[in-house]
Length: 379
Ligand code: ATP
Ligand code: MG
Image (tube, rainbow, N blue to C red):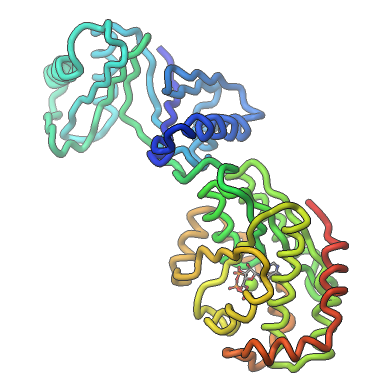
């Protein structure tokens, strides 16, 4: 008798037809990559994935974070023998802390006697006979005892909801503009959860933004990495660009011109690294630069799709999500970012494209972008 994890993946992967195998293999690789430093055994028993660990709690904690895994069940393996199954089912029934239950059987091993129904009925009757408080409720039970019969039999009632989504690395790549704020890590998480490979760029205005602000962004990238197994972070120098804008452009246009430069550098870097899209943490109406007009003007300089997964989310919901994915506590640490250091008093909320293009034409745009890209540090 031993305890194992039974890993189930998102129903969406079942629907991939001929490509299903490719998604499954990627998911298995990703699971193995987050378990690299643990002692474990992986068994693929005709489409059912079983994991055995020395430290099952740690294994569970890691596997449920892997995108594409929809559920992890803690199962007990016993001999495929009716008496063994009944004994274990009774133990599970005592653990479920519910007053009503049902038994559900999946008989993959067709040489095992009886139908699935017969087995469920017999085990259910045994539990009823040997426990005082429990009643059967087949329609709306508070607890379900699952039995899976293969070479061996597996009995379980504990099912842990996992991340869901698609296996990381199966849906192209994106350059996430990662600031130290609350929003952009959530945006990155949402893209990665759909299988998109993440690369991050952080615009750093040394010495106006501190080393600690940069460390905070690295910490956020590391939290994202705990889901994906890998994340590259580019730190792009932004001081010269900001200085030039402040010196040569109108104060109320600083923010929007700065955002156009961020977009240009992100796109250039993406091009250089063979990355097909850009992602930001923008949400419509949240701040002065995130008006529809502002988004149109900053999008104007992009040469590839720009994804804004938070665009229609409320701030409170984004904050809840940040707490759920463990980035919130790091995001709220009070180190200034380059936008807070250089905020104009009255930024334009309805910038006009023609005007902004004209205002920034006094700058040597190409050189500023090229210098920032050329001097990126990589982590
Ligand atoms: P966040 O909480 O993600 O910082 P925000 O609400 O503070 O977002 P802005 O400062 O207007 O909003 O930034 C909008 C988006 O631009 C951010 O979500 C992020 O994707 C990108 N961004 C802003 N500042 C930086 C920076 N210093 N480095 C990289 N990306 C940035
Ligand atoms: Mg910000």
